[in-house]
Image 1 (tube, rainbow, N blue to C red):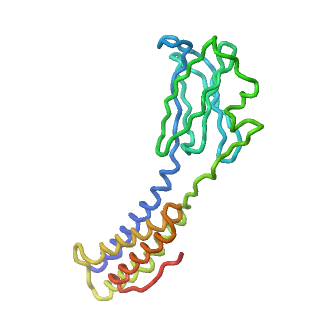
Image 2 (image 1 turned 90 degrees about the vertical axis):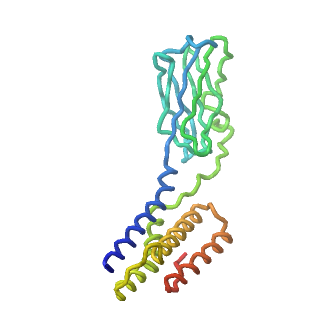
Image 3 (image 1 turned 180 degrees about the vertical axis):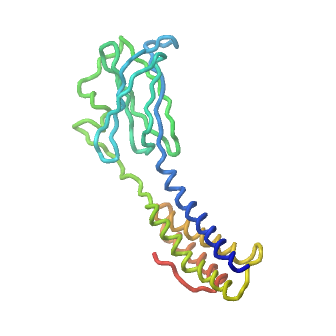
Length: 240
């Protein structure tokens, strides 16, 4: 019976690692900008075959351009884009032998798709020569005022946190059960200890991602560790 205990603890550890890695995977999601090009204010006046360029300043500070061509219904799409709310995108359309520049657009937090229809008109005012590089933050005279990209915790560090907690608390519990020839009762100490270890690991990850203020983080973490020590009888402080 006691041989099953380490397997249960390892399974709990695996679940904790997956739960810690999931936020990091979610932050890597990409988005797309799509829509239609029209030449007049009615649905049949589509700009077939118009050339488009998506202009934006990437995380490295360099201006990037992605080309595309409007389809038979005037539709277009740019995919695989960063959804960082700090990045502004500008759509430039070349049609009628002229260039048209859209207003800056950007993704909101958690948003992965932007629908942006574009009207190109022969009567529109000519595009200024200094507007060809994109919106003002991309011009030579006004460097981009971009906030630093958000800091996401390295997934390797998340795994180290979970394994450290498991080594400090999970293994002593398993050894104690194996030594005494006991198995935890259903709903007893083992599930509660595993849940506390998961909560501490999740708390550490949130703090590393700067989602929590240090005083709040330290207070909650001490409380969770105190409870875990009471349950396991193992008095240890995980390194920070």
